[in-house]
Amino acid sequence: MQNAHIISRTGFMASDTRLIEYLQAGSERYGQPYSAHLTDRGLVICYERGYTWLGSVPSELKEKVISTKVDAFRMNFLDNGAWFFADQVGRFSWRM
Image (cartoon, rainbow, N blue to C red; front, side):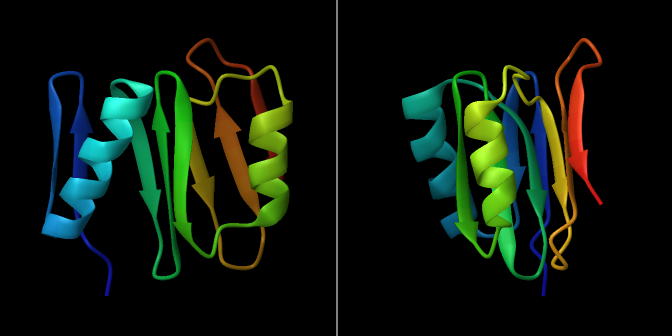
């Protein structure tokens, strides 16, 4: 079962208190959360100064996000290993 989450410029909300606590801890360390992508198996949250992930997130995605010059603002991934991320000005990286 997926949990619902909302991230805006003024704050965030989630349907699970553990997810709210995780978002809060990340924002204290990395700043304002920009976006989150949640599947049944994994979670990635993009913050203004970093990223956090839980569960099963494609390892190639983690490596690419850390090594690229694209400052990910939005990110999506599938359980089959496909992924996509983009910054706020249109640069992107993907693997399908």
